[in-house]
Image (tube, rainbow, N blue to C red; front, side, top):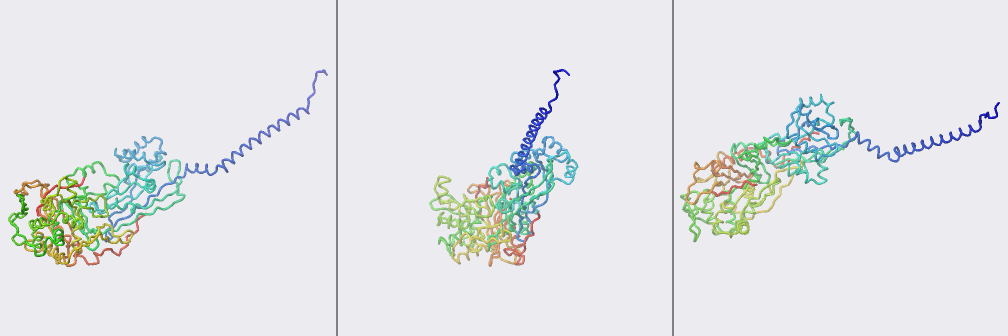
Length: 640
């Protein structure tokens, strides 16, 4: 064999193999160590973090809106209910092509341009993965179309919710009010707590009791954890915290009395207010014309809103608390009482009425509404019965505006009554300081003559006149008017604001004079007591909408309908034990005793014809549990 032939070195190869094996084993062990460390980091160290991130892909926390509190009248009649409605909603994060999805939905359901506009606005203020409503009140046919095409609509859902419903429609629109969708202005004023409370809720009280009792009616929001699939469909509820329903309100309002007052007012524009003399509870609250509040619940259409907004009859205007009208001669009983208490007049005071009045050293002639006068011996009782202007002018000339202003404010004029409703207007009873500040001129004696008859600068709402009349009826106890009688069955006590002090014989004279308005031979309000088996005390008033020059005669036929006199009437009954006080305003009705008094008569007849237990302050019923809310000022002069 050749010397160069080399034999295989098994020892060297074995050593090389062993070294390589050790390196390989070390490498594998090192890699396993890295893998184990990584697994430990994922499964132990950061387990909670990654589990949360994973759950967020399939588990969502959804708000559960509370059931809004129900509203009943004093007899348990439902005034504000909640009814099931189906809403088409979209979760933006689940939709790849939003425009294409909306276009497809437009072929399945009826979508207005306004629906899409509102949807786009809501998208700007939503939370992630929060369903945004696109269409409300879907029909069964529309729901079926969406269900058939569900596979093509990821992120789209039909959700059932309870929406507000007002079964009496127009009857209580101005008192109960309505809810509407939360707008951008309201949302911008929300605090962090408000944002939390309204999670999952689209509506908020806008006007009436729905607004003033919003915090109680809303309730407390609940939450639930739900598992969803990749398309956002809910598979199951993992955990739930139930919401707290809103409080239930029981009102002093009486549905039947409200209907009677509305029908008695008829097609006239105006207002009727009835108050429980013993408590200050508001029994009837009519502002005519009215509107259907259900139109506003899920968003009123532009067409419907324009019709309401542009109507000459202004149906959205709440005449009871916002209509500021010259009260006219309806103030005479209050002024007569004030004159008696101040010692300006007495029960024996008499004046001669030739049909006009002149202040000393003044050439101006103030014409009585009865141009030939009321007689030579007019006292307070006849002055009230015949609405004699001269008697009260003579009293005002010997009095002063400071005393008249003090009396008026104690009866609730010139300031808000404090009723539990929003947007109440204060009216106006002028004073020296007010005129100096508002007009820059001093108070003149002629201003006092205007004020004592409820004219000139004087303005009052129909509610203020009802409160004034109720205060007279209970001989000076001035209650705050209240709409809500009980909250969750707990009665709300009456609130006495103050007491108007006067001698018993002075109250007797005013009562006798107001009774004479209805029953004396020359009384101006006879129609208020016609056919009733109990006595009514009242006072009529007639306010001119347009001024008439001195010496001219009012001619109804020469005036447009909306320029004719307003008719007013205030009254209480029965005289021997007053239970109910009423104020009536009929816009352009002309005669207070002729047009407004019969409305009050119908209200009295209905209320007093009921058994005593049906007019109690709080019924013994318990509401059922719920299933799963510029002033119209007439510049005018007054005829007595």
